[in-house]
Image (tube, rainbow, N blue to C red; front, side, top):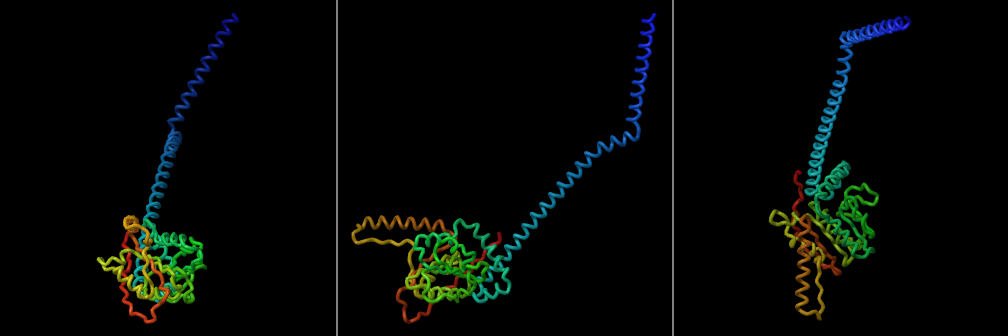
Length: 322
């Protein structure tokens, strides 16, 4: 009897649990289909979409900013390049005194010019100033040097020699600002005078006269210039005419590769030696397509009678737009 009652109670409890489960299920289904639930579901699905859309907008905006920045940089570079070419042309077509006044009126132009100059030099396979530095290192460090048109004073910073660095504007305490036709140095006071791409003024012979004045007898004059300025087929000066004019000023031309033979060398050895030197010399000329180097020495005894020197006109070095 008791077992039957117990069995009935368990059945009734099971039915109640089943009924309660069904009610919960029905309630859940109603809630899921209610407008509020739909809104929640929509919001839940819209949030990732909105986030993705915002992210895409940010990336697009960043891309536009990047493109805009790149465009501005290109425009600034073009403007800077154009400004450099304008200043460069001015320096080649005016006197040193006029160039000094030009930069004194607005010293920032000097920085603009040298920034553009450094950019142009970055395209050269070899810089003439480095060859001159190497030449000085092969000679005595006791030689006193005058660097005409020194720019950033790279020469002085890379040799042990005492170097007087001259340019139109000085942004460095070691650089002396002056017209290169009138330096503050005394006569016969230096051993080496350097013009590295700096014979720019229309009165460049005055610069060379000043170099002659300050050089000691047998002092060196080193000139590096853009090759196109000495290409007579394109309006440049004849290098022989230029060399003759410098020699008439009181210098002797010294070949970069000198050949010395003693009397006991046989003819065959001399010829062989000359061929080797000429071969090496040709290689050097081939590797330096951009510039020419001239080496002169001041005569120990100067002519008392001054000559009328016929100076060739040096073609301006005008850079093309890149």
